[in-house]
Image 1: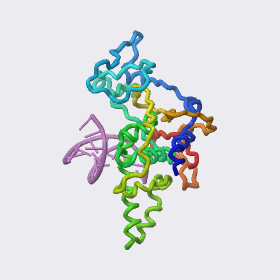
Image 2: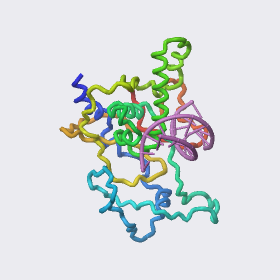
Image 3: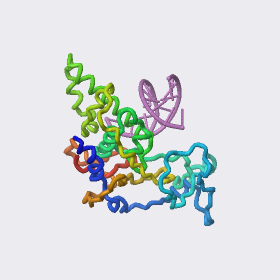
Image 4: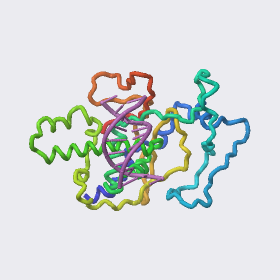
Length: 280
DNA sequence: TCATCAATAT
DNA sequence: CATATTGATG
């Protein structure tokens, strides 16, 4: 089983789409809204007091490459928004500083990364922030993870209850594999999750979180492509080409559904789905 | 500040 | 229904 330890990363890598596959998007990266949200780029140089924290008291442990290319403007706090005046004004450009991101769709794949991350971190360190970092999914927020984690924990709890209780587990047991938790069921639950009491065996030897972050001011809003990114293992990153599938814009294949209409937000809610649902 | 949870909203 | 958001509490 030691192999796995050395392979876990490779396996992970395998699932990761190659860089090339990630970028190609037919979407405009910067949408009008975005520009507006950022305070309308006036035909002038935007210098914006860039923040190159030189003397920040609390140094964030996230010192990666100093690649702050892409001088994005920083979110200035001044929104002319608010009422007023303009009223609806067509509603095209809304200053809306309160932009909402589209709902994240937890595909089995994404969930798998989540579970893997939690598994490798150990219950102990599996807190939203850390998980989020390990997952390295662009656009994924701490709250996304927190929310999912909360639900996932409930799922684990139910699982423990049924597996140990035994008594009177009438429909309870069946309840598990029932329609609910379809998502959670798609990913195997690491053993240790079921008993927190036990520490993990030998897996706290992480080569260090591959968190190779960019420093980015993530633009909030609009459909964005959540994408992963290959990290390089500390000891020899091997990159194999991964003939993977392309990303679908929005299309989620529900496992149990002969019907085809997947993304049906009854309304016109924008749903963001991650990469395509391949197979597990 | 962050994590966790319960309740609630969309 | 799945996810987001909020508020209380540690």
